Length: 175
Image (cartoon, rainbow, N blue to C red; front, side, top):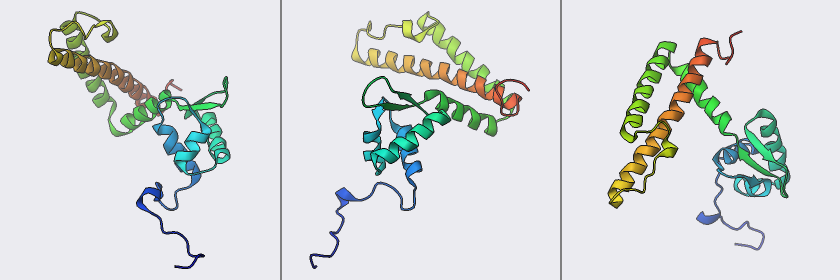
């Protein structure tokens, strides 16, 4: 090997992205994976692009409603818009199921919610204390049940949104 040959890539420095994937797609993928406000430079590092390119694409994603921007501090921080993800999920459900299937699923979910309300004698999972149990296993079981209850409530919202989309040809409000 001469001094002009490129250094072979080691497994540690292999590219994370598929060849041909454009910068916008990489920034979008990283933005969808972040769970807390993150500066553009950190997103750029993971997306394998310059901070300027990441900022340009993040600002475009913000205009689209995919991410939200906090400009109060320095550096500016970006985070995924959970409402956008819910809308995506609801749109997928509306495309895959009929209105009747969605209504049936909401009924099943409401029964599950009622079962949790009866089990815990509460109407809100955040009002339930999980630590007032005698054993680690009982605490774990209670935490799991409360977490699943939160999931049921989220799914009810999602399927209701999907029903609205399905009944109104992809719109939330009837035309």
